[in-house]
Image 1 (cartoon, each protein chain N blue to C red):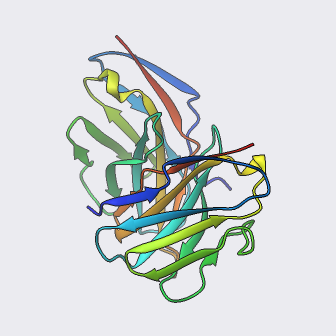
Image 2: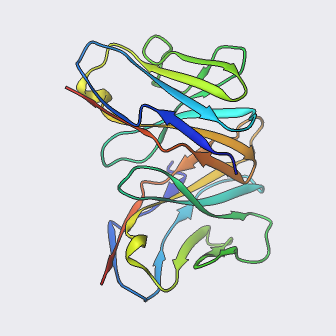
Length: 113
Length: 116
């Protein structure tokens, strides 16, 4: 299975600032996703990170708030912009290797004060 | 309509005993996949087991097995010989094949606590 790393693993940020989360995969993957998990909640898909083109956002998520880059098949970044306490969550990068194989990175635990 | 339902608020099991975590799903697709993930307090999502809608046998992976009842649309996870390290959140998820849609939809999760 793909090995996925994320940086940073956790951070505490001031409201109004931005944080960029990096996701690195040890193999080339076509499909890469970003998820958010608010405290005590399930996972919610933010967007599909498309290589070489704009990300595809889910309902309720917009590019201005969560810009995503995917410069190649092994790397992606998610920026959480103009943060508020409601953005305090775990952010998870995920890759699909086949229909029955989807793996997640270790997550970035973000606290906004 | 909710696609994945996990209604058990929290489960407790004695170490070395077996436990069943419930999951029901809703889909009109004939082809779909069901997944279970474990999330310890560290936050990572660990893939446990997969069941395809056309699989005739229940999936097994070590101490994990999936009790798949297609007609009832249920995919319960059975953990045998529970260990203290099994204490975590457990999420059921489904991937449908509808056009280009290949997203995982997650249930709300179940907290499992293993007692020594």
